[in-house]
Image 1: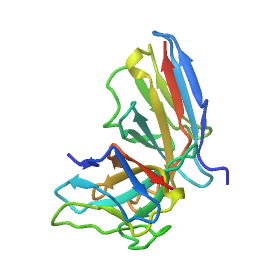
Image 2: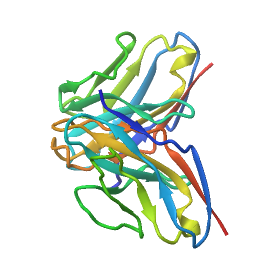
Image 3: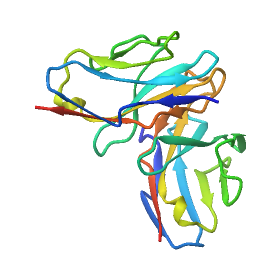
Image 4: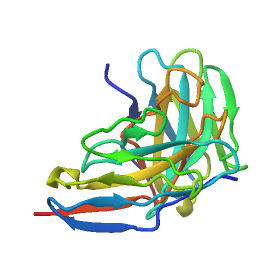
Amino acid sequence: NAGVMQNPRHLVRRRGQEARLRCSPMKGHSHVYWYRQLPEEGLKFMVYLQKENIIDESGMPKERFSAEFPKEGPSILRIQQVVRGDSAAYFCASSPGALAKNIQYFGAGTRLSVL
Amino acid sequence: AQRVTQPEKLLSVFKGAPVELKCNYSYSGSPELFWYVQYSRQRLQLLLRHISRESIKGFTADLNKGETSFHLKKPFAQEEDSAMYYCALSAQGAQKLVFGQGTRLTINP
């Protein structure tokens, strides 16, 4: 099992461009979580998805950010019209089930730099 | 709202000395608490969780509901324990994790 795969590992964008971050969960996992880590801070929850459904998006900024987890393929976190403040490490995690006791397995993260 | 506080950003101890990483939380319900660790150039991984009540790599953590704390302890630190440690909370019935800011532990030889 390759674990949670995130790509790209590093992404550089200019202000106003779009950023697409991809996350393939562990085999057999149907729950995906996205977290953002700003410099010198802990991870902050953004969104929780199951296949084709957004379950909890309470941590997502209201504008420019969206996430999906289609029936086939990886989960995508999309940031439109990026600004310098979007520069951060974005982590994806997956779990096999919805129960809180299920462990979340993390990917290596995507480091987004906005010039 | 839930909150997790790790008061120490940096902690440095000598090899063989006891180590304690502090974690306090704010939540009115019954939380589930976790410690995650990130070793150099590795991904974040679960170290232990309070419901398991187990010791991993010599580390233990006890949930103290009276003091709303979940401190991580190890009696004799080893150099390979140097890493970034994050305390995290999951609210009752919720799936998302609320993380503290992390503590960078350095074990000196």
